[in-house]
Image (cartoon, rainbow, N blue to C red; front, side, top):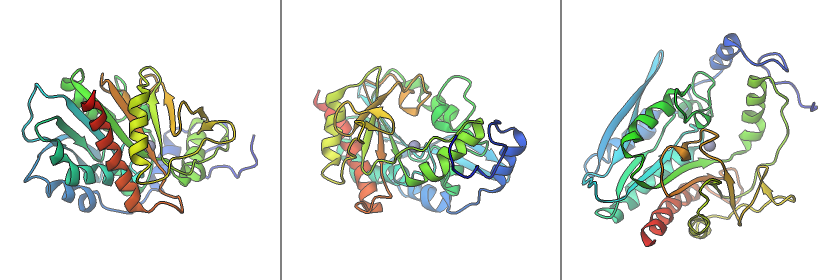
Length: 305
Ligand SMILES: [Zn+2]
């Protein structure tokens, strides 16, 4: 037990049912526009890239077109690169960092790789600055067969034909102060568990795949991002968010077992970025730049091998 105030929805120790989820959903309000911030930015890229609608979310009264950006000159003999952002809609720099990568850097890779960029996997949550979709499901535990999240299922379908031909997949995230103040307590309440206090690391870090860790690749990404923003130190236990670091700024998870986005391809090189936007030492601009730098470094490393 903890001495925190109980989460305002549900009964402590009992998992939420449909009525608690409906109550939660009724409290979520639209705070920004996917259409204005994301769809328009993607539309402005149509002169240089192909845009595909790979699914549609129907959360009445709202619907959302799921959009991905593709290299116009797609050539099957080239390696493919998958960039995903906004799997967690509130993690703003994942969305805008992936768009920034396309706007400013994608042309540098023309004729060398095929790019597939899905900047905002979870638009309902982007608008509500939340982690879950409208059904209180975390898309980033849902990249599995018979997914409970349509956001995840749609991306799996988009990527399925390429699954064995992706060389690099980089999934862009953030770790924020609201993880500790809101989202971890909400998850514990939803699941009928106690909320265990944790720490939020100050700085950028990466989550690799413990089944395919590729340490030199991860270190190359860290080195590139360190020129843009600071890397998170380990805590006094030598850990970041409860996992032992394997190198400065790097932890590993079994990404496929956990149903994480980074496990949806058979890519040789995969990583998940975690930017810390609440740091007094990092601006929003720096966070977007850090995400774009991570994408470039990931591709550059893979192409150098
Ligand atoms: Zn995330």
